[in-house]
Image (tube, rainbow, N blue to C red):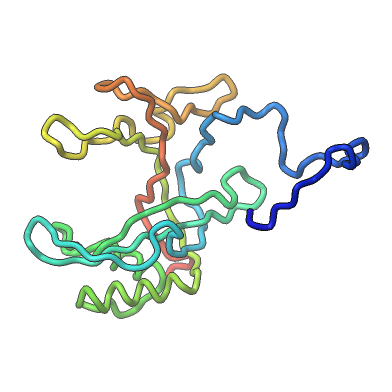
Length: 201
């Protein structure tokens, strides 16, 4: 944007001008594009541009944890899902089953020995993501309310699963639904529900 040059419209040769690549005159500018379809996708992982780096926090139990924001770019040439992005968040917070999402991603990327320390674990994932590794992800549409509940806590998703969203005449689904409590429109987001290795080992 800093290299803009003002032009004289009278000197522009637009008679034989080619169409803008990718432009669809029938497309609506203000419509929300559908997230990638629910299912298993091959993807390339990286670190989110918007939230680059590693972050730290403290859980309700008072224990510290580390967090990172992976971003998956789907690789499905010839389909509408190709090159679509899915954002995720992974932390070292231990779940009731004794694992954490950072460890799950490390395993899917082929890390044979998972560090037991939170710092070493998040560093291992950070370094792997810098190499843009491939992985299989399972995604699902979810419509998450923007506003918290009356108790101030995060509310549950309004709808989970692409097939539960309103159908369109063309057989696809409308990614926009209304929040039953506020009446506001909420757009579906693709959520990563599972990471798997590209080739089982």
